[in-house]
Amino acid sequence: MAGLDTLRAVAIVSVMAFHLNWRLPPSFAIAGKFGWMGVDLFFVLSGYLIGSQLLKPVREGRGVDLLRFYRNRAYRILPAYLVVLALYLAWPGWREETSLSPLWEFVTFTENLFVDYWNNQGFSHVWSLCVEEHFYLLLPLIVLLLARRPAAWKAVAALGFFFVLGLVVRSYELWHVLRPMGAANERYDVMYIQRIYYPTYSRLDGLLAGLALALVRVFRPLWWAVLVRRANWLLVAGSGLVGCAVWMFWDRFTSATGAAAWSSVIGFPVLSVGLAMWVCAAADARCWLGRWRVPGAKWVAMWAYSLYLTHKEVAHGVYDWWPRLMEARDWRCVPEYAMSCLVVAAALYYAVERPFLKLRDRRDIEGVDVKARVEPAL
Image 1: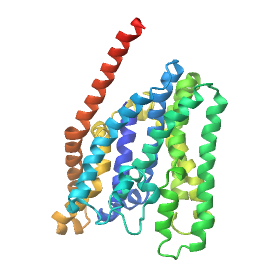
Image 2: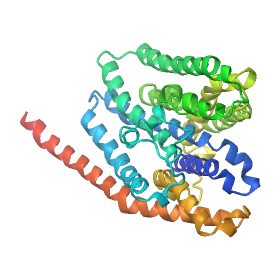
Image 3: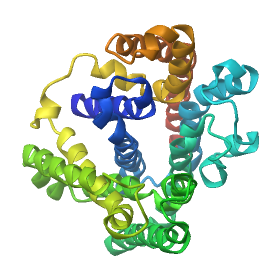
Image 4: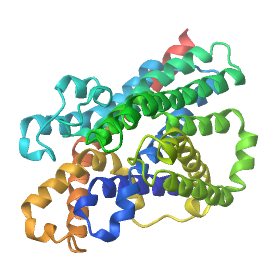
C-alpha cells in the first residue's frame, strides 16, 4: 500500500536523522531533535498491521493460530537480528559504542528493561524491538482469552487498562524518581531514558492506538468507512496533533516539573493519536498519501528493518573511514551516510531477511495444503 510504504519510509528516515543528528549538517537539527517520533510511528503501524492480522481470523470464527503466528514472527525478526548481534559480539569495530549490555538481555529481548545506559550504549536502539517483541508475545494470548466470549466492552476495557497503566507509570517515575534528582543532575537524561522512554510498560501508547484502528477496521467496518471517507481531513487533523506533540516535547529533558513533566505524561498519547490518524488516512487510496507513490519509498520501506538494525554502526564506520569529510558536517556527508546505510541494509535484506521470508511463506502454503487435505477426512 503506497500510503503505508510512505509512512514506513518516513519513520525509518526520521529515526536515522535522530541517531545521526550530531553527524549531520546543522540544517537537520529539527529533524534530528524530533526524529525519535519515528519509533512511535513504527509502533502505530505495528499495532494496526499485526492487530489486523490477528483479529481477522477471530471475526471469521477461525480463532488464533498461536504456533503459526509465533513462527512467522520468528522468521521475520530473528534471522537479521541474530546476524547483527553476532557482528556486535565478534567484531568490536562494528560497534557504534564499545560497551554492550550483557548478552542475555539481547537474547531475551529485555535490554529495554534492564539497560545501564550510563555505561552500556552499544546496540541500545534495540530497545524498540524489545517493545515490539513483548507486544508480539502478549497480544495473541490476550486476543485468545477475550475471543472465548467476545464483547466490545472487553476490548475497550483492555485498551483502557494498558493506556492508564502508561499514564500511571510515567507519572510515578517523573514525580517520585526523576523530580527529586533535578534536571541539573548529570544523570537526569539517562534516568529519563531508562525509566520512561525505554520500558515497555510506559511506551505502549503507539501500539494501543494502532490496535484500536485494527479493531475498528475488523469489527466495525461501517465506522471505518466513515473515517476513510474523510481521509484527507484525518491527515490534516493528525498533523495538528503531531505538531502539538512536538511543542509539548520541545524541552522534554528540561525538568520533571511544569510543562516538561506533563509532556511526558500525556504527550505520548497525543502523539500516538495523531500518528494513528496518519495511518488511517494512508490506508485509503483516496488520501493524498495513499494515492501517490513517493519515488523510492517502497524500497526504503522494504529495507526499513535492516536499516533500523545497521544504520548506527554503518554511520560510525563511515565517520572513521572518511574523518575529514565527515567532520565538516556539510551537505557532502549526507549522501555518504545515506548510500552507505542503504547498501548495507539492502545486503542484509537480500542475504538474510528475504530468504527467511520466502521460507516463512512456503511453510504457510504447505500448512494450508495439509489442512485442506486433512479436514475433509476428519
